[in-house]
Length: 332
Ligand SMILES: NC(=O)c1ccc[n+]([C@@H]2O[C@H](COP(=O)([O-])OP(=O)(O)OC[C@H]3O[C@@H](n4cnc5c(N)ncnc54)[C@H](O)[C@@H]3O)[C@@H](O)[C@H]2O)c1
Ligand SMILES: O=C(O)C[C@H](O)C(=O)O
Image (cartoon, rainbow, N blue to C red; front, side, top):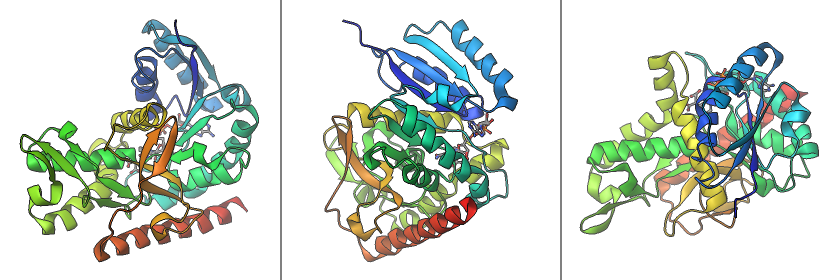
């Protein structure tokens, strides 16, 4: 029997991530090749015509899984009945800007959209915040939508996770699909900590630790970390636009794993509400290693944290606490 369609909201759908993301969703990349979808696309009035153009292209693409399109500038209409909300709407960083610079523009959007989601989304709607500052926007959304369970609100750090996998695969000249269990700790910003201490590579001789195979701690503790931390800025410098296809693909990976589960023995990185695990202050949206099953994520517990890592976990937590304070000052 055919499945009932799932309603997926994409805010900022007329933007560049939106343009890459909606066809992925309509093709089943996010929820699977047998899952029909109804797309809800929201943008602001100046982008209404362009949003309508995206809707026309979705019709023209004749996606078999796409059972309907709602394209609107009305936030209530956009949020009504949605099962999954991918929050991309906002202003991107331009060359030379730090993520903090986009804070004041974006947090107020998340405050107002929180209420619309809380009132009008389907029960148990899963929310992914992509727009920067992603962790702090997600926190504001959580705090202004108190009836949405905190387990249903997340921020995208899967792009950073995938970037880390990509760097290791290039360095070792192995398939990216053979590398797993890198971790992104903390903020989706240049203080994030890409950690390979628990990462492995599937080799013909079995699973081997990344650290052993790379055998160059100076690179792993230096250039590797800064390359992943600065990758967003490097893309902006090269394209004069921020990452879009990789961000859209990561958003699909994030939701797919959340809904359909992570493979046995594999963990992924998600920005989720801290419960104090690994001595990360509770009450921040912080990226942790997680496993997922039955539509729920769980922070991987018991991983060893050496002194080098500890400092990095704390540094990015400090930045998130500062961002939280700054966000509240922008809102008041
Ligand atoms: N977390 C991540 O890994 C990651 C990766 C890449 C980009 N980003 C962030 O994602 C966001 C979107 O990036 P983009 O390149 O698509 O930007 P973009 O400017 O191309 O698109 C953003 C869209 O949001 C719309 N928008 C603005 N305010 C809105 C509102 N109140 N409601 C609905 N829509 C609204 C704009 O009209 C625009 O169409 C940026 O904040 C960017 O920094 C995050
Ligand atoms: O870095 C940015 O501002 C864009 C995005 O967050 C990214 O990581 O590519």
